[in-house]
Length: 398
Image 1 (cartoon, rainbow, N blue to C red):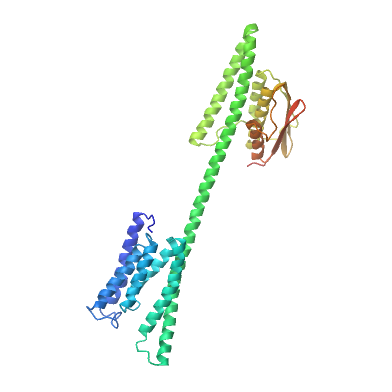
Image 2 (cartoon, rainbow, N blue to C red):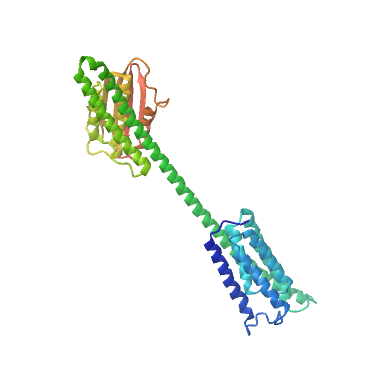
């Protein structure tokens, strides 16, 4: 029954109700105003009833935001008491409009329609009562009946119009609040989606960095173990490559973890200028990739395209190190509207890379890289070779 309302709003509602009570109840009692001269005798019971009913109506208005259902019940009690006391329409009846506004603005769906029914029914009942009271004469003939009926219809129409307008204003405010809540929910959902995309991107980068670096380290460690006895200098060089690769991977992982912890942006990302370093790391594993770039880039490709090309080649070469026998062909074609990537390597005996879409985080990551910039990527085994083909549109980023 009670809604969560801040103390500030509750205090403002109470102060507003007290002010409304003072203004609307005091005006008809000012000497010479004549507002109640026909209805009450000074100092009589009707004055007491007038003050009590006014306090009840504005009391309902004071709690309208906190408890709209209770406020509607209290307002109906005050209206019935007003008619029982024989009081006319007086200014404190504006408190009823506040209650009707509250039922539509903050009440439940059921209370919303109860408030609308109260606006219609209360206006009709009030018009009928006050029309008969204002006739000022006993109903003894057809003419007096007609006058009372016309007065009731006129007053009832005015009361219904005022009450329905107050209820409609509350309904409009309810729609505004719902729209604001929808916008907040949409903004929160977009924030969650953006954070999830950021986590996926960081996880993808983490996989690329760790998988490639570990593949290089494993290949170098195997070579160093075999060369340690026969050629110690080669083992020393391999250990140096392992240390260098591990330091680079550690730096990249720290940067990614910093992004994940502090959300400070993407940080520096690999570009085409870093491809030679990538190829050098592959050569240190004993694999000599055959690189072909034809045609060459016509200008400076977009940063997103450069990053996608680097990560796709990194993953493809990592697979070649892990599953290949040393023969790798890399072809880049920088056409005016797109760049085509082809990587082919001979598959060594044993477990081969899975088909794209059938498992393997690396292959799925390559496809996601291509899709992020509006491109496509296919990877499959053809006989003894494994082929990766990607097409990235230049100038289309996401």
